[in-house]
Structures are given as structure tokens and as C-alpha cells.
Length: 243
Image 1 (cartoon, one colour):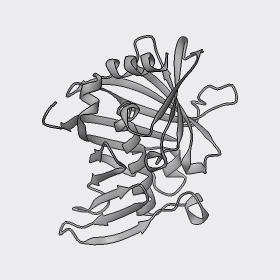
Image 2: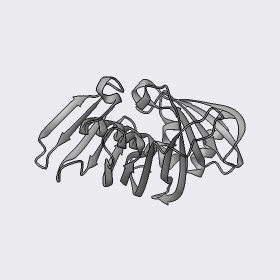
Image 3: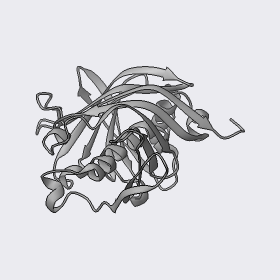
Image 4: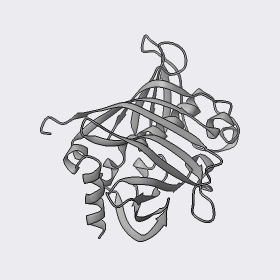
């Protein structure tokens, strides 16, 4: 059952070959929400050009901050380069502790926004990655329809947005929602991503609009409080030559 569900998801989102041979993903991105505004960063990204790798946590966002600056991130580090390629600030980003619980500087924003983007652009291709495990769960009714569910567990090196996620999949194989424990809150808060605005880009079906809400005790997203919103446009992909 698990293998069949994974195949159905991949087929619905463009096909296994299109995702397996993807090397890098690109998009135009805007992002905001309460998680940023409450940490004194109300408008972190506006029509920024984003590029992320598929086999490891790594990416870049430009422009980022000052005109000509480019932000880079990986699993544990964030850094900013100016137009001459000189590093102007960098830091190992440890996670939600101390000051970072209350306010973020540019490097905190870069690393958290980068992690959100990396996960959003790479799913469902992550289902194909080494060390990833999947488990089909019982069906539930959510969003007015019956949904299949898939539990996704990521190895530590890919768990920039958490190690465990539950995908809600409609009858066509399209992922409509993802529940996980938010790393921003130290894994204490369950967050539901609602995926909408699906469009096909370069053979891949991508959710262009994502909203992140706290998950209520009933299991439904609390849509009064939008923690993060993410808009993706102009998605493209570079692939291995054999694709």
C-alpha cells in the first residue's frame, strides 16, 4: 500500500523520472506571516529569486537585504555575500533558543526562510531520497473530502523543517496538506501546511500558494492565525543529461 501511494503521489506531481533526475529547482518567491512579523521581520522576501539543491540542504536567495546582496544557506549555516562576492556576515544557526525565540536578525531570517523554501520546492521529490522512509496511515476525512495519509520520515541531514511529516493526499494523488512539528518552536507546536494554486512548470506540478497554520487539538488547521505564507511563481528545474 505504501509503495502504491508513493507512486501515485509522484505520478500526480509530474512523474518519478522528472523528480528523480532533478538537480536544482528555481522559483520566484514572496514570503511573510506571523512567524516573521512577531520577530521584527514583517516582509522577509518579495519576488526574490530562489535556487535550491535537491540532494542536500543548500540554496541561495537573491536579492537578500541590501541591493546586490545574495543570501546562502545550508543545513546548519547562513551567510550573506555582497555584489563583489565578499562575505559580509555569516553564522552557524543553532535553532530556536535564547534570543532567536524573540527576534531574528538577517541571518536567522535567511536560514528559516531557506529551510521553508527548500522543503516546499523539493516535495514530493524527497520521497525518492536515500534514507527517507514512508508509511501509509489510515484514511481520514479532512477539508471536506476523504484523504489518504503518508508519514514521511527524513534523515537528520535533510530534516531542516523537522524529521517527521504527515502528508494528506486526495483521490488524484495530489498533496493537499502537510502536518509536522515546527522547528521554529522547538518541535512543541504542530503546524499544518495547506497547499493550493497548483500549476505545472517544466513538467512538475507545484503548489504555488502555501499557508502554515497551528494545528488544533481536533486535528484541523486553525486558519485564524497564519504563521507563514509562501507564494511561488516561475518555477523551473535543471536536470541530469539523461532525463
